[in-house]
Amino acid sequence: MVPRYSRPDMVAIWTPEARFKIWFEIEAHATDALAELGVVPKEAAAAIWEKGAFEVDRIDEIERETKHDVIAFLTNVAEHVGPEARFMHQGMTSSDVLDTCLAVQLAKASDILIADLDALLVVLERRAREHKMTPTIGRSHGIHAEPVTFGLKLAQAHAEFARNRARLVAAREDVATCAISGAVGTFANIDPFVEEYVAGKLGLSVEPVSTQVIPRDRHAMFFATLGVIASSIERLATEVRHLQRTEVLEAEEFFSPGQKGSSAMPHKRNPVLTENLTGLARMVRGYVTPAMENVALWHERDISHSSVERYIGPDATITLDFALARLTGVMDKLVVYPERMLKNLNKMGGLVHSQRVLLALTQAGVSREDAYRLVQRNAMKVWDSDGALSLLELLKADPEVTLSDAELEDKFDLGYHLKHVDTIFARVFGAA
Image 1 (spheres, one colour):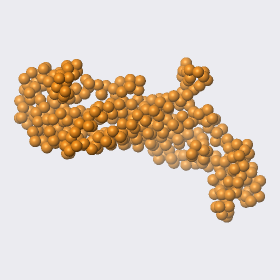
Image 2 (cartoon, one colour; image 1 turned 180 degrees about the vertical axis):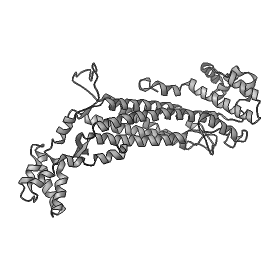
Image 3 (cartoon, rainbow, N blue to C red; image 1 turned 120 degrees about the vertical axis):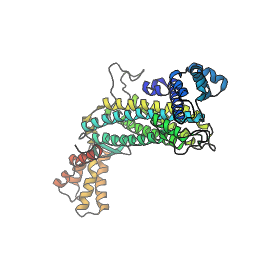
Image 4 (cartoon, one colour; image 1 turned 45 degrees about the vertical axis):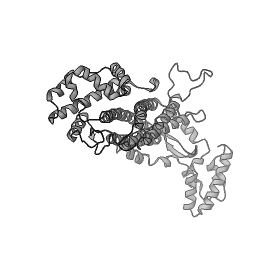
C-alpha cells in the first residue's frame, strides 16, 4: 500500500485494528452460538462481549514468541476476559477466523468499489448526454474512419463500466462466504449451526463445502474482476491520452491554475493523471495471477496462499479505489474542444464519406470491385495531398463516376452518420 495512491475509507478496512475487531466478532458470535447449543455457558459468552478487548502491540509481542497470529490474538483477549476465555474458539481452527475475516473485508471493500463505480457512471452519463451530438472522427488503427459523436464514446465507456459493476456485484456475492467448519471442514468438533449463526451476524453466506479453508476459486474470480475493471480504466485513460496529443487536442485533462507540466519546458500540459491511471491499472492486473495460483493448494490446505493475500487483498482494493476516484475526477473536469473535433473530422478532404459513395455506386449498378477502385483512386489523391484536395470535387470530375453531382453531395452529409445516436443512447441509458 502506497499512501500516495490510497484513500482513507478503503485503507481503514485493512488496518490491524480493523482485522482484529473482525476476528473478535467472529469468535464472540461463535461463542454465542455455542452457548445456544448448550456447549458453553451463556455466562461465558456474555463475558466475552463484556470484557473482550485487545491491543495490537500486545498481540505482536505475543506473536513474536508463539509465531502464530491467531493464538497471539486469543491469548491477548483472554488476558482481558479471564477464565471464561477458555470457551472461545471451541472446535474451531485458525482458518475459520482468517478466511471469514477476509470475506468480511473483501465484502466491505467491494461496497466501496461499487460506490466508486456508481459515482463514475453518473459522471459518464452526464458528459455523454452533454456531448451526445458533438461530432468527432471515429478512428480504427489510429486512422480516420467515419464520423461518430463524442457522446457515443462516453456512452460506450458507461456501458462498459456498468458491466463491470454487475461483475463486481456478482464477485462480491461469490467471495462473501463464511466457513466455521473445523480443522478439515468436517464439523467434527463444531456444529454447522455455529457457521450459519456467524454468517448471519456478519452478512455472509455459508460456504457449502470447505476443507480447512474457503476454496480459492472464489478469490481468484474476485481479483480477476478487479483486473477487468482496471483494464477498463486503462482503456478510457488511453483514449484521453490520445485525444490530448498536440496533433489531435480534441480533449484534455483539466489544467489547474498554478499547475506545472514540466520542470524544463514551461509550455507543457501533460496528461499526467491518465498516464498515472495506466500505471495503476497495470498494478491491479498484476495481482490477478497470484490469486489464480492460490487456487491449487495442497490437499485440505497449505499456507502458500496466505502471504499472497496479505499483499493483494489490501493493495488491489486500495489501488483500484484510488484509480476509480481519480478517473471520475478526470472525466468530470475533462476539457472538450468540439471545434477541434470538427476541424480534425474535416481535415482529410471528405475521405470519411468514402463508404457512402462506394455503396451508392453499387446501388447504381456498378460492381463492387469497380466501385471500390473508382472511390479509392480518387481517395488516394486526397490522401497524398494531405487533405488539400476534395474527394467530392474529384469524384464529380471523374468521368467513370456515374452519380450526379446532387447524388454525390448527398453522400457527404455529416448528419447521415448520426441518425441512430438516439437509438444507441436508449440502449445504454434507457428511454428518455
